[in-house]
Image (cartoon, rainbow, N blue to C red; front, side, top):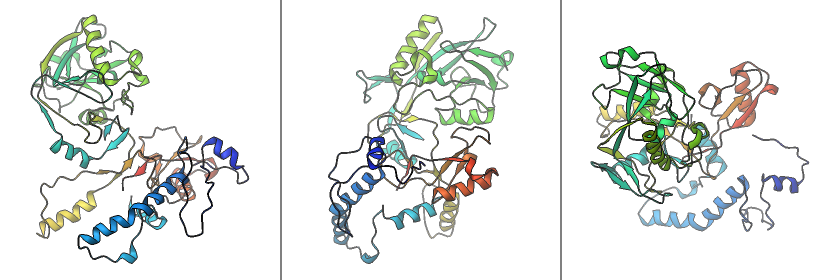
Length: 402
């Protein structure tokens, strides 16, 4: 949260983009006029005004539709989502699938709908048009390539359906009892395109019958690899940015579109003599219902509602035959949204010269359910046992999924 002197002039604030000016006078009790240009940067005042402008035009129309459906409600208690009393309630009650086109998280519920209504079951080599790409992108192919073992003429072959994610690999994992790889345990392979050494590790969850029996692990871009990464204490490297471009971790491929890099890597592996094979692979492809983009699994600091207690009560109702739910499959609910409008997430990241530096994936450094900056500051001082004037707080930029 940024704090500025009260006597700072309006011109300076407007130049910095902190506020948007409103030239039209607003009568007491009426909402703000938004007859002004859209600000170049985020403006809470503009967003608030835009919300209320929409509500004044559309809100009653929605209520009339509800009444026409026969609903009998206490209309004296009606409120708008962005009203302050509702904002406080959301904050008090509250404690990743990613669309590169929308640059936003897509909830598990939305993804499940996509699976049912937009599920693409691929049983052969298939070309699909993806937003932002001139040419169709090939899916359903399992590509095999070799990682050279350090200080050896040996190699270890790994399969993948997402070749671009090799730029985020941090390990190769094999089944501990697989005789083919026992002499390679604890050795390293050299990444062919980056200055990165990858350890060869073992994990009992590896299926030796799938592919080559060796698994390339990209912990930041695959839910299964995430579990490997946690169990084996691997490095988490983001190789694909929010916009679908390869990250700065990707060397000569940085800044290029993910699926363009997929094709380029295939050619580059062939030139190095490390390409081994391609096989058709039956798979299910998740497509964003709004953007028609391919869903990209990304590791991000997002806020979730812990659904265990709610699930326990619901399951109890099912067991008591008060309610029937099929199937019983409870997951935590991702409530982070990357939008201009909505309730700001009441969570603050702590930094200070008096505590170790951590990244935003460390839950211990987040202060949650704080209604104000001052409340978050008090909680941070208590948690880290340091003076408040030595603490820097940064509020999460996302908003809640309402």
